[in-house]
Amino acid sequence: MDYNCRRVFITGASRGLGLCLAKKYLEEGHTIYAGVRNPGSDQITKLHEQFPELKIYPLDVSDTGSVENCFRLLSQDTGHLDILINNAAIQAETSFNTIETTDIDEALAVYNTNALGPLRVVRSFLPILKNTPAALIVNISSGAGSIQLTEIEKEYDYRMSKAALNMGTKILYNYFRGTNIRIAAVDPGWLDTDMGKRTGGYLDPYVSATKLYGLFGRLYCNEVDFLFANNEGNTLPW
Ligand code: NDP
Image 1: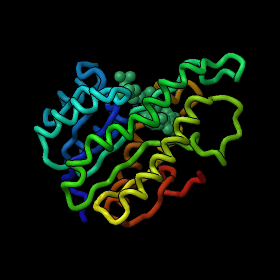
Image 2 (image 1 turned 90 degrees about the horizontal axis):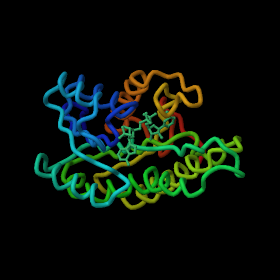
Image 3 (image 1 turned 90 degrees about the vertical axis):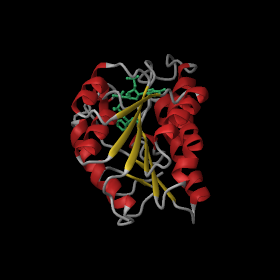
Image 4 (image 1 turned 180 degrees about the vertical axis):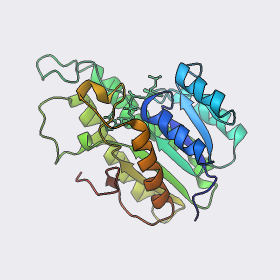
C-alpha cells in the first residue's frame, strides 16, 4: 500500500494540531476533508485561500446529528476515505483544580467530545472507510490518558476522557481485526497550542504534524505496529 494522494478526513481542523495536520497533508498532495465547528473561522479560511482544493464541512463531534449531517455531505463528495484522524478535543476550565473545586458536571462535556466524539465519527463514516483497500483511523490521544503514567492529582475530566478513548480504540481494534481497517491511538507531544500552552506546552504543532505525517504513513503502509504510542511510534503503557 502506498501513501500517496490519499483521502484524509481530520476533525477539529480549525486551529492547533488539526489545522497543522490539514496543512501538512495538503502540502504533500493529499485530498483533505476538514471537519470544523465554524467553517468561517479565521485560520481554516486562510488555509482554504492557500489551498482552494481543501474541502470543509461543519462538524461538532459532540452532536450525533451534526456528525450524521457531516457524513451526508462528505459522502456526496467522496465514495471512500483512506485515513480518518480523530483530533477534536476539549479540556474543562476547572481541569487543573483539585477534587474540592473541579466542576464535575463540566467533565460530562469533555467525555462526550473526547471519548464519544471519535466513536460517533467512526460509526457514521464506516461505509466509506470500508470502501477502500486499506483504511487507517488514528485517534489523537494523550499520554495523559495513560493510567500507569499518571502521577498528577488533577485533570480528572481530560485524563479520564483520554483513558476512555484508549479503551474505545482497543475495542474497535478487536472489531476491525481481519478487515481493511486499522486503528491506533497516538500522543502528539506537548504542544504550543491553545490547549497545550495552559500547562507550558512547547512543541510547535506544525513540527508535531510533520512527525505524525511520517508516522501515520508508516502505519498506513504496515511498516510499524502499535496500538497506543507517542509521536515517535514508541508504545505507551495503557
Ligand atoms: P486546541 O484546543 O488547540 O484545538 C482543539 C480543536 O478541536 C479546535 O479546532 C476545536 O475547534 C476542536 N473541537 C473542540 N471541540 C470540538 C467539537 N465538539 N467538534 C469539533 N471540533 C471540536 O487543541 P490541540 O490542537 O492542542 O489538540 C489537538 C489534539 O491533541 C486533541 O485531541 C488533544 O487532546 C491532543 N493532545 C494535545 C496536547 C497538547 O499539549 N495540546 C497533548 C496531548 C494530546 P473550535 O475552534 O471550534 O473550538
